[in-house]
Figure 1 (cartoon, rainbow, N blue to C red):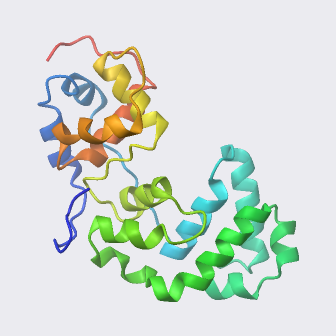
Figure 2 (tube, rainbow, N blue to C red):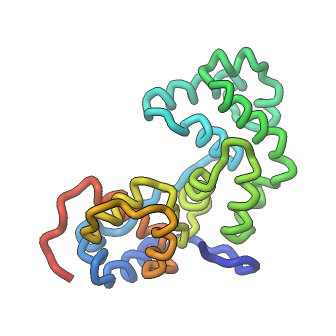
Amino acid sequence: MSPGKGAPPVRLRPKAAFEALSRDAVLGPWVRAIGWPRIGRVHGTPFAYLARSIIYQQLAGAAAATIHGRFVAAVGGRVTAASVSRASDEALRGAGLSKGKLASIRDLAERASRLALNRLDRLADDDVLARLTTVRGVGPWTAHMYLMFFLRRPDVWPVGDLGVRSGYARVHGLQATPAEKDMRSMGDAYRPWRSAASWYFWRALEMDAPTERA
């Protein structure tokens, strides 16, 4: 990921990403057909975003949204480390949290101060990843999504995401979906805009192949 350790954080620039990736021999036609990358801005606090991410893991959208809504109500309408700490286990389990997700959100609340969540935007990508993955239930995929969508970092390459790997295989005409270990080097061609490239691979699964040729 980029920026590297010690480098100042940067943000995604959709126009620059589009212009760079549209020149790629293989991905370029898809980029031109899709248009600028629309990686939406996420509002709220880092803690609330991460708590929501934990709740949404491995759940269908509608079910996750229902549980998340009940969770927000259970903590008094404002999701903070303090409001989670005040809520009883019974209230949170009653909102629909599994035992594992309850433990993860409790751990997030307990670590929130030490992690300095409100200052993560000052850190390099690898440092953010290292901090977030100390939280129970927050793995590399969740941390990558935080970097991409909350911090809007431009060069995140979430090789653990099946959609990104499947989209890569479709765009490149591969017979099999690449393994995570193989995907790590496959993103080098898209630096420093791997976040946008990942977004295009997601979109490639939802559309017909472009008819133009690079």
